[in-house]
Length: 170
Image: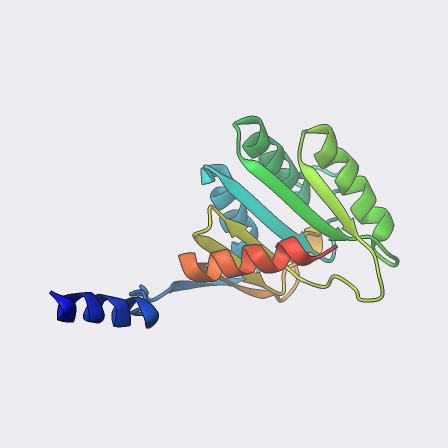
């Protein structure tokens, strides 16, 4: 009996590492990112947290960042916790404030980061499971014309880490 107690005590002092499931990754080249982003936002059930250097919602027909903004608002309306963090300083501050205003009117929590360091992150964590990370800003040219490369990861541990990182940005 004493040996069992000591064994349990020792095991408690040295936790066994949790089994991790390997991440599944998909490469998102050029325009594939926008389609995947809109799909994943549309499927979100609990939480979306993201940060972008540029979120430029335009007026023209077929504007992809406007479609992303609409999908973020729809997610919020169906009860998903949505937080969007954007760079608040020049040269992108004016575009980001316009996007922030649109999103905030739809109930989305928006933070405009200000400070000595630029918020140059382009990342989104969805439901503490999926991460989209890469070079894509949310501008029509980045989502439709530029050479851009990002990755979609189905990796719960990484998604939680990315979420915690993004929460620290102010």
